[in-house]
Image 1 (cartoon, rainbow over the protein chains, first blue to last red):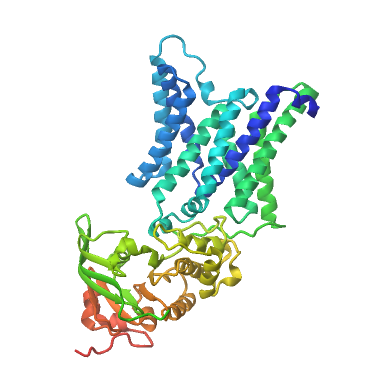
Image 2 (cartoon, each protein chain N blue to C red):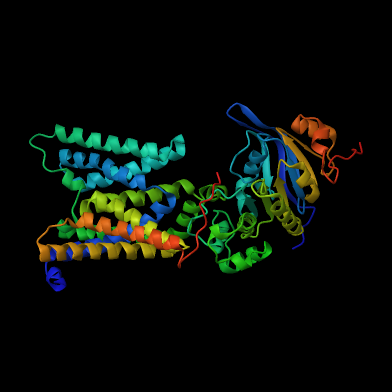
Length: 286
Length: 253
């Protein structure tokens, strides 16, 4: 049955895309989780829709528009947080709504019936176009290079932004870079695996990995592994259910539920304290 | 390296600073020589933290000049260590003590540390935390955490150490151990300790300055009643009351 699944090109692409996505999400998601900015990823995913509309109206590939809007929103949110002292959650909600509104208006201005533009945002892991694998591979290379080059600095800013500022580190630039990484990751992966699966992969594996590691780099590796296992298990499980019973369980949601199950089990086992790193209570410091 | 008391570490001349229209420092002159251990007391909003930020080069004065080791403050940042009031970071953050301390070398103008592991080990040794170097940061007690912050400031081998109320978030016993540690460090390094607790400060530091928008400093450990009145605007006996060692002594002049 497994060999059977692997003989289908669409299944092979889903597997490769899933593993590449797990790596991007394991690394970037660890930053998202330790900085507690998961809402940013949801906001940027939707803000990117404005770019889809622009690409459609102006006649270029909507994914480029989505990338531009996603990046601009990430930098805009980051800069506004630094300059205006506005809470990031409020800013994210605003770019979320504005991006969608811009997209809808631009699409309505275009002549003729609108195609299924939401499909540009809400991809499906079982229908990954072959050329998109290269996008995701390039994304992984970008993330690995940036994080390898700047790991200590990104870690320091994520850990203690105020101290980083006091000792003269370029905190604003590093924070914006981190948001830009989140933005690019989200925009590329939503086209490939769908927005819901991206948000799940950015948060659940990293949150699970955090239970069992006391350093950021191992957390990223473990999060990547947990994401990869969830994806592979989800793909084969839904394939297996379909070939045995004929019931068609959607793969993306199955992967999400598996990742959530792993997180839930991790919480329970960790709480029981049978092994792993002892964790302190969250401190009430201001 | 023994401190040389002829070397000027910090020199403020006629420094004024205001946030918008709110004056925080007015015409402050302040000189710190190598080997000094100065406690700066004064009320909240009296300009203590602003003074530290000026010395760190994070703020520029509206008037006057700030020189640190004879250079503009920004250029001397690599020689200055900073210890914040309390750990503002998330204690559940996945980072070990050793890495958190190593962060002290990441400042832009810090001297290149040749062997980071070795520098971190020495800094941890100085604050007697070698035993917990590989623990996750949240597994430390409050006092140990405060020492981590000091080690992080020491890791770049600074010649000046600035501490902003380093014991305001820990209990008295821990506070005392931190102050004893500072007394020891003060033999090798110039220290500025900001606090609002006159009693604690007077037991440990070499000299005391009062700062309440204006600076009152005579390079002495004695507080005159007028200094305290000027700094706090409150009756002096309130401040002197209840400390085993009388803070206020008769002033020679």
